[in-house]
Image (tube, rainbow, N blue to C red):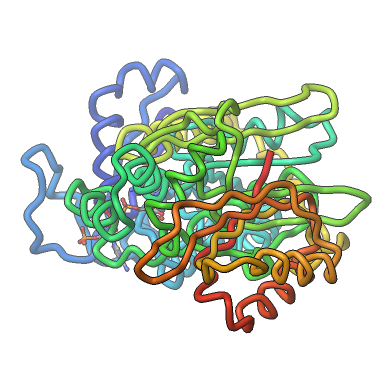
Length: 430
Ligand SMILES: NC(=O)c1ccc[n+]([C@@H]2O[C@H](COP(=O)([O-])OP(=O)(O)OC[C@H]3O[C@@H](n4cnc5c(N)ncnc54)[C@H](OP(=O)(O)O)[C@@H]3O)[C@@H](O)[C@H]2O)c1
């Protein structure tokens, strides 16, 4: 039996700092859980000259990955550097060099998870990634183990705290997108380059990971339709509220008759749904199992300590096995045999907002186009007409319709001389 477990920490930023803090402050408690001490041997950073918090053990800092790879006392590598290329390369080399891996990296797991897991299995090693989705919310293990007896039919999730903060501010304070984004950046909730978050790319990585586990088939991020929140306006939020809805950036995965829908986009959801009440940087993931019915996971999807909680949980799991000399359970790998439905084939309800000439007969022209494409109108609301410009704003809610039909109908509607602008099209879920 080993009398200590050696750790290598790759990255000392937000998450790495949290991991270091937990390893230091909870050393005794963690040693009791594993039945031997967890010893941090080396920390990899990019810039050795950078100012670090005073408690940083600077003597174990290095900018050379080989020092971790070639250290025979390191059993587990924790990867919290982020990005794709270096992180993937370090994890691959780590596995080839006999190290178990714990990672918080959604991008690498979404894009290369299957390859890394196959390699780990060949090497008799473990790779765990609880922190890659939902920060401190336990999700990966529940999907892999606790929900294993279920056939999961749907996931509806708010899995990006940055965008949820922005849409919450837009809804509650009538802010426009740019102002809410600026505030999120000032508070450190959004990156200086926010594209990955606001365009729904980060949520698509996370959805790829969850949907792969839920539907037991490999779902790649490039097969997930994603649309961001930058087209939303304060008006959409006001009208949604008047209609009894909230607007959220939703990650949606559904399986019906062996066809899978996976998409990330802003959506109207009824305001009485629990998901509609998830505000600020919080995340919530609703899963529909055939045995459980709906199950909801809720909590902090990011931040140093919540994310460190998930990283350390994985470390403890692996360390207990290493201590006892147990081989990891084989990873369940999935083939890509199920069909992923193109976005054009989905059927859902829609909200459309447009500005039209304020004349009799205009609505009839629009309804005719929608009718020609088998789109049935559930309600139409006209907001105050502008006498100066002789225009009016209308909102149309549809019954379920085929996405390709809606797109075609909107193209024809835009071409009508009486339609000044089609301002937004938002799908309605739940
Ligand atoms: N932040 C969160 O709340 C959160 C939540 C869940 C998951 N995650 C995931 O956790 C990972 C880390 O995120 P973070 O927010 O902690 O990132 P971060 O604050 O930017 O920190 C990155 C750290 O990695 C080091 N690093 C970057 N590239 C490197 C390279 N090529 N070689 C060596 N060191 C390198 C940096 O070194 P220097 O210090 O020298 O610059 C820095 O210490 C990402 O995959 C992210 O998606 C983050």
